[in-house]
Amino acid sequence: MGSPHFPCFTSMAALLFGFFVAASWMPEFAAGKTRHYTFNIKYHNVTRLCNTRRILSVNGKFPGPRLVAREGDQVLIKVVNHVSNNITIHWHGIRQLQTGWADGPAYITQCPIQTGQAYTYNFTITGQRGTLLWHAHISWLRSTLYGPIIILPKRNESYPFVKPYKEVSIILGEWFNVDPEAVISQALQTGGGPNVSDAYTINGLPGPLYNCSSKDVFKLKVKPGKTYLLRLINAALNDELFFSIANHSLTVVEADAVYTKPFETDILLIAPGQTTNLLLKTKPTSPNATFLILARPYFTGAGTLDNTTTAGILEYKHPNTTHHTSIKALPLFRPSLPPINATKFVNVTQFVENLAKKFRSLATKQFPANVPQTVDRRFFFTIGLGTSPCPQNSTCQGPNGLKFAASVNNFSFALPSTAMLQAHFSGQSNGVYTTDFPTKPLVAFNYTGTPPNITNVSNATRAVVLPFNTSVELVLQDTSIVGAESHPLHLHGFNFFIVGLGFGNYDPTKDPANFNLVDPAERNTAGVPAGGWLAIRFFADNPGVWFMHCHLDIHTSWGLRMAWIVQDGPQPNQKLPPPPSDLPKC
Image 1 (cartoon, rainbow, N blue to C red):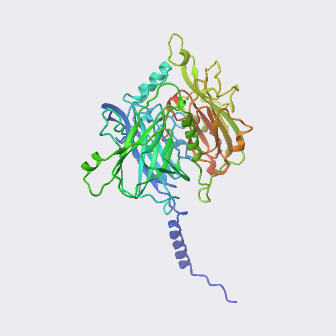
Image 2: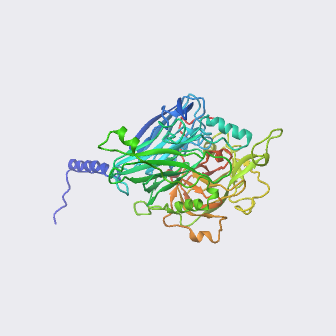
Image 3: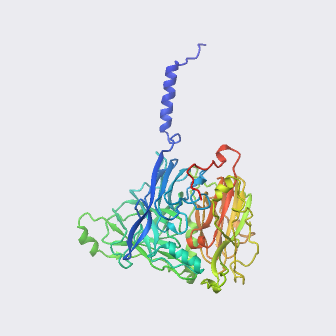
């Protein structure tokens, strides 16, 4: 038997080199790129509704610039503060695996960036693709400081749906004629509800249904017979919004940067902080018409609201006619949206629940739904509004002459004056926070029935500590204290699975039998139904301090927020690294 033939060393080296070159082009070997951005926070004058005011913006743009990256890319954003306000930016929905220092909520993961200072947010996008958003995460500054995050699939990977002809970002926002910082400051002082916004906007433009706004209109110009991917984002401060395009159906294919089983709908409800990718198939031939794109609030609470409607226009490109003669003369179609005040219309509430249940994970081999099948820790959190005592010798404008407050398990979360993550990392939590947040309400009552006589909440900075990789089930129960209301809850640092939802009080013996543990929706922000409950599950696989709060900013300001602390795991890649050298100081 002859001896085996070995190639000479040089040709072996050439072979290996060739293999590594080839491997580097294969998707699973392809390391992500590093993408650099600079966000200069500056003042800039903007006129809307015949009213000019000075706003905060990034690089002079309103809405702010797009942040584009591929799954697997490292992103570095240097934020430079040229204004007098303290600033932080949150990359809403980015998992921030081992990069908790880059998450952005003020006094939770970082102290704010002060005037004249800069901070570089540094994170890698892991296992996410789709649309998210970035926004300021301090006080109410996100009213103008927001923009889209577009995460493309890895190179050589395609969408699990038809390739769109074009992609368009549509950001819903809220416009105030006065400085929103003055609005929240006044509300916290008087204890009453805040003054509401003056308009809703599509890509910063109010649209033709408002005074002085016939030119401030978002126009979506399309060609017939094409498929467009609409990246829909709700960046409004305090309102869930219905969205619809006249005479056109939309196909939902992704929510919160997770692909979904496609489903068609004429109307979408999108809460602040939520994102949804929609396929819009245009008509096969150019219709002799234009179509309104509308968004207006879904309102479940009591009190005042901005009950206006923002409108954009879907316009078909006409090959044969000149622009001026065609558009003005064409009929304009308007979509029908549900009535604004949902409390008076049971069918609206039912529509919202049915719509929520249509969102399902793909749950395929390539895009699995890793739902925790067993649970290590169960939590039951009541959430809702309440009151705080009125300071002596002053009058307050909240219920019964008290101040409005909001709470989780009757605790209204007080922001500390230093960042919790630093205190946790350095082991110096004393005087910053305690770890005795209650796992269930201290007093049980009929949560959605007649409210109790005493509505006051307690104030504290309390957190829940979870060992690394704990599987968590959390039931969020809305309460009718000071009125039942829908609450879009956002969990930082994690995606969670919505395993169940319903109306009335959660029943721990009956309701779990109906949980979906196969293909539930995976999200980072989800609405707790007005007078109902939401059950979510997640793995605590991300060490750090993670904020959870209502994404209606007024409720966050009133204290509907808390924090989870996830401990380090045993492996090096399961530990929180030390803070970056430029982390802002308090």
